[in-house]
Image (cartoon, rainbow, N blue to C red; front, side):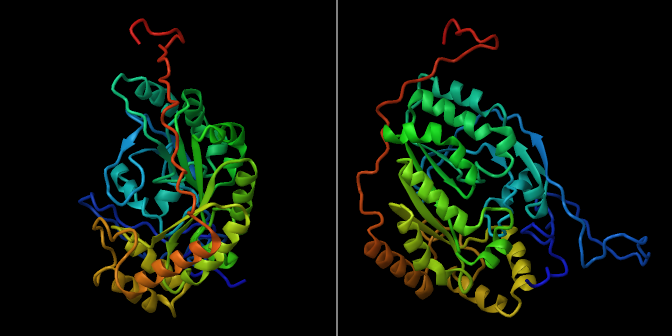
Length: 367
């Protein structure tokens, strides 16, 4: 196994902390010439970074979305930041709103929302609430490692199960199997659907792209376990990265189908805001000989830029390479029988609002 690049942090995706675009000041590391004490890690071996979790007191928990190229209108994010550390994560720029960096801060300085379930109960009980499926895992992974201790995602699902409210989940985290006791009965009522994200099958590449996520092979086992439990499950091939992961497209779909996947989707690599600088540096350190070619193909799909935020093209890209990926995906799904069941619409008719509870646990007089 090759040694880590000089500036890479073992077990982390980002190689540095880009400046926060909202700050007026900037900081720059300077070598002052002092020799570090004996035993101090050298520049070639950065010290290990610890993960910290802070409590975020959310005021609302359901986020609304009206983007025409996203297949959900409501979502919940139990956490902000993600320890999986995927270098390509389009959610990284959201950390800038917390006065933190979308780089290493995004994967080491995390925020949990322990009041999520209580807020959800209140919002679902609102007289004007209209039931539509709620998506979990749209920004950061609801089953990242800290869920084992905080259990915010499980508490949210418990409320949804109680109200018979439909939900979808997108994740890489094996911890979802812990919650089969909730998800399987919901699936039996057509209230749950799961997508497992797999961007590549190469273990070595996965360790660099998704350093703290389960291996691709473990995620295939997740698909089988979900399918065996009766939960409709699909695979999300996301992101497709030119000259790095695109070669695995058909193989991922085939493996997922063999393990019980019934649905599939894909997303082209997106590089919004600071992500483009992080990804460029990651490429330069891990794949310097391919970096120029990869970014050339990215720009061919993005109108000559590193990123195209326009609705309709941001998820798929444009041009010959994007069209080729779309065609390959379509043919593979047709051959494997994926996405053939057009009746997989979650049931919204079973929903019944929860009874909001006061601080003392008693029913509110005017709830």
